[in-house]
Image 1 (tube, rainbow, N blue to C red):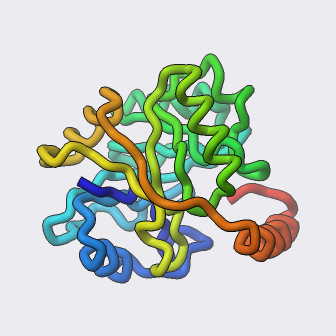
Image 2: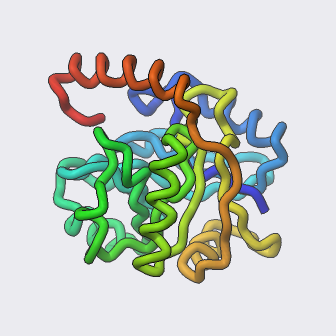
Length: 216
């Protein structure tokens, strides 16, 4: 089963696609599961995706970078320490995943991952450079954590560019989480090209500066 576990919508602050657009695209691609991971909110939930498994999620801005929270019932507050954020996710029965850890303006970096109670790392993000994804995959192997994949799509055409592959017998969100924690998953897809990164980096840094160098 193929799943995109990192998708943003127009309710995310920087996404440009509607929830309906996302669901339609996931069906076109034949995906079996998806997660909407809008920044610091869960305004799309609850929703049905017409036979596609929905894994509730969000992307939390911690004091040191972004963390993906899955299988949670309510938003996790932004701005907390990494440890407190992970604890708040676990308190809801969810799992905490280090998002694109080597993205320099929003990733946690190795020092903020090591020694923390993460359940997995995002090791394939289609909006990260190949080197960053490789470093994330290496770190996951070193600390013996599973690696997930997601497109980090903010526009519809990017949905599905990076995916997590689950066992075909997964039936619901709880099965997906068990598969992640059990490490019976893999990833497939692509990283961002250098040309795309230069264009994206210029836009992102400009927006970042416009926010007073405050993370989303």
